[in-house]
Image 1 (spheres, one colour):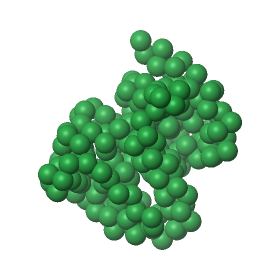
Image 2 (cartoon, one colour):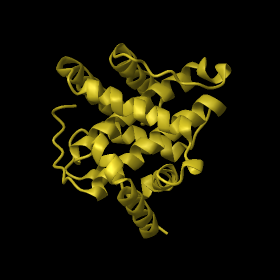
Image 3 (cartoon, helix red, strand yellow):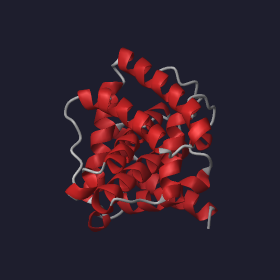
Image 4 (cartoon, helix red, strand yellow):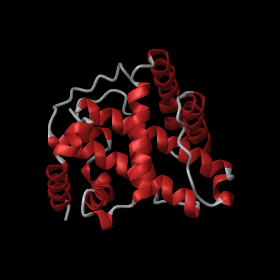
Length: 214
């Protein structure tokens, strides 16, 4: 992912968009693990962001702000009072940000994933973005690369769903999409310290962006 030709402006708006993408991916993972299903539009928005290898606009990565409507709403809640925070979602998001930081130092792994995503882009043009073959190949990229970085993310849910190969592939693909959003967040100037300092501003921006779609 080092060679993504994204021209990023480091500001709160773009950081908020990337965090909404991360939050949407995490929520979709939770849904799949617990119920075996998730919103198809949310799934497509997250997967599409993985295949936007060449883009010069943060919004374009997700296919438009409207694709992240649920993500902004979830982010607003996650940045609110402690009693509104979904701790499981927060744990997954923090784990993905941590893994992204380690992945950032793995040059050969980045090349491997980039090549795989280029193949997936061609494949999706033929089969469709959410076809099981496309999902399986993206999931393999996560399994063969990101899963080799410790500590591995342990997704909790119903065994009957987690043991379903299609559900498992969707979850792995979404985790990779979450790392993509974490990478984008850093490109936009995001940092752990900045997140703590700007928590209120990020929530206000999520509310503002959500309001533009209502």
